[in-house]
Image (cartoon, rainbow over all chains, first blue to last red; front, side, top):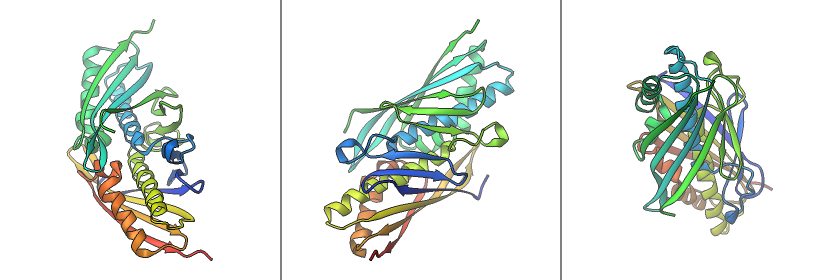
Length: 145
Length: 145
């Protein structure tokens, strides 16, 4: 994966702070600023995309790792909550809490290991963000009948 | 802005690696893994969300800064290109190039200043990512008639 290049492009969809960003396969997301500065409320905030990235990246890992472990994951849901702190003129995330709800006949030790392997080893998004943020995780297994 | 909390949640929309992440105002994005691992190709990749965040965050700054500078920005488009490098078991962005195309009767010195102020001071996304990535920028002004 070294020397891999990732590209995105972004266009403005009004005359102010509302944007559409698109990847090379044509999938896009809407982003905007707050309504106070002219956002229309149709998009996600740029800083939110980082938290969405952590949720997506680690969940992909966890799905694949649990599969390899022969654990039957019926469903997964993730909540991410982050605190922001003023650092000079910006406001960075200083803590990022990732909570996983998992459904299925799952072994706790396997789930714990999968989450740990993702956040501490494989998830490139969390590895990028951990330089500035303390990333912690929790989980709950919901047995399905 | 200190003690501000940012939250997102994410649900799985199939039985594999396709997800919808939503912010607290109900705006959502689709994310997925590569097709090789079961992605359906309907979403953006988690690592792409970081680059989209840089584009969105800095463009919001630039729009607002140029407005304060009484510069008439007719349109703005952004292309982000990043290289990935293997760091232990993850592949992080080691360089992120942000190119801005700007339309309008804009002064080069003002545009340059606005981009610099965003990426080096105000854009929280770039401040988060610069710990791991070398972020560089370029721009082109397109005069409109």
